[in-house]
Length: 159
Image 1 (cartoon, rainbow, N blue to C red):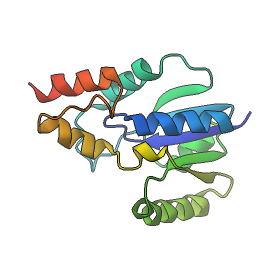
Image 2: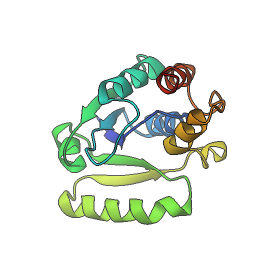
Image 3: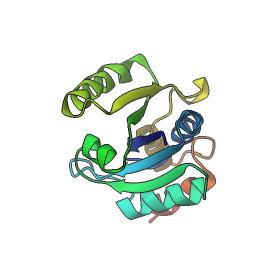
Image 4: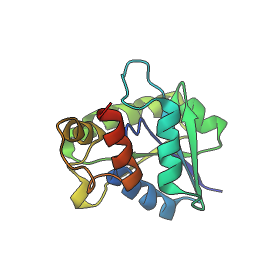
């Protein structure tokens, strides 16, 4: 079985993330969407809520598993029998950071490869950070995120 990890904070999940997941599903038998806990980031949504939003958005899709991830990505990949890490590249500006991370991950665990996937052109400008900023300023995010995520953003930011 060819298994890959698609890691991220998914705070919140966007249509760009969903596009990368869909592309990865075509290449691998199973894609584990690994929701990372990063103590250096101050997420808008707590880990459990990000996991739940992904579950509600993706439903029970064949070949997709959603899991929390803590610690080193390569350790998580190895523990879950994954041979690849999927990373989305939106623009050239993403590449330098992602390239450094891929090389470091290869140094830590050579059996885990990094695969870069580009989302559809209509999502290349999209990021969770931008979506949150639009929502904070009262903008409509419905075309950027799944409906349940748009509702969660409305509820969270209107408190």
